[in-house]
Amino acid sequence: MSQRPSPWRVNDAVLYDALRDEARVALAGLLVPGEARDASVANRVAQARFELYDVNGFDRDEVVAKLNAIHNAGPARG
Image (cartoon, rainbow, N blue to C red; front, side, top):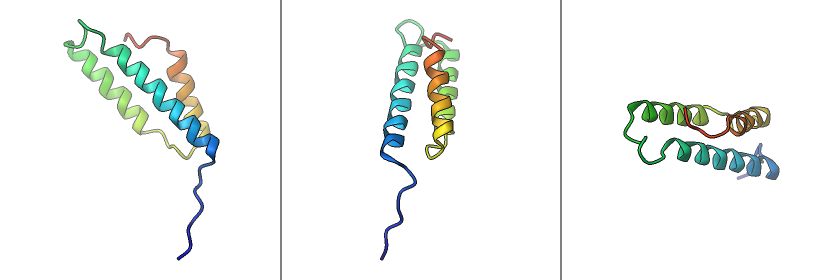
């Protein structure tokens, strides 16, 4: 039984991990005390998670674009 090589390179995995870390920070910024009860916050969190899950982790350009979008958005305060 032969193994198929992974389409990921090591630096791709590191880049994807960086995207996940940025997403965690952005989502945490939405969940600050006092605002967590607001229904719009739940909607923004759901939308952000959907957009993250929609990223093709094997498409390096897409991962970089999403990472830059999250990073450049600044504090996630909707």
